[in-house]
Length: 405
Image (cartoon, rainbow, N blue to C red; front, side):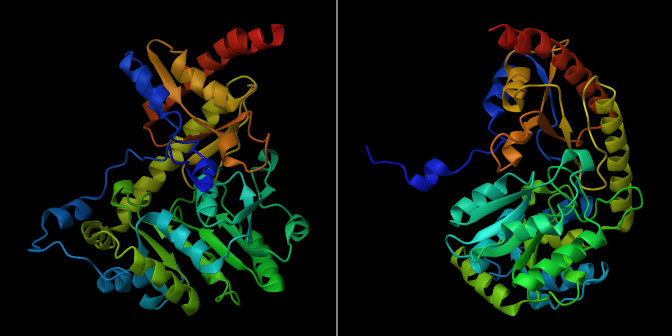
């Protein structure tokens, strides 16, 4: 029997999706599951996007340009201008989701063995993308005690070697919801200029900034135009995860030209989804304002509820729609699996993502979980009740047994 590739064997499983078989088995037993494990919003996709697809009058469903519809890229240019980002439409390359944009960025800017510094905990698929490109992730640990703020500049300097070629941030962060300040971005600006690095920023949650806070794009930082590479997506902004339309953005013409070669190799982004994506730019601002208010309320409900559970600590994030919370548990992966496999509260349980899968440093995140507040307020409260009861039972039945043994 032929052997599987070493790369395939080393490819990490998604901490977000690896517990799905246990969830499916629980549902087969009749257990209702509240899914806080994955960032799949329950917010309705704007009707303008769905209507645009319904009303298509194509006679042939053809390839698009490898960089995406020119009409869409020109309208995207106007969208970014509303966020004080000045671009030419040729600075934009439409991708098959933000995931492909990350791959194109890494493949275009980094060679095998190059290092990218990433604040952890980070979006778990960065591990997979770097593995695909033979890139080495160098984690720099952010602490839950200070809400996962950017580590100090000295910590970055200690990690930089001749192989370091980039820094990658997610702003606002998945999985913590942390929103980087203008001052923190200025720190990164200094580092990339001093060491001649690329600065990758995953900004797919740009629209989700709470408590009157403002998102600042790295594309607005003066002097790093040739260093800045941004990943974007319509998935979360317009609750259109299944469309799989993202964007790679950079004023560095060589980066875009190089990424274009990878784009040509995969032919084109999906045509039907681009129709929906282009229509998204006609969605009124009132839609996003209502969504923002809804998520801010959900965040308040979840954070307050978590911090009322004994020995649980959850900082209040200012962006995205995730929290990373510290729980009184011994092993987050075992606990999350146990919630699905061995526990229910009145026929219900909650599905969480073990935070250990969002760290590259071994041993970190074992008492932390990521939760996405993508459910309505009533379901969030039921989820909190399940979690509180689950922690009580787990401590008695599982952790107590481990201690005895």
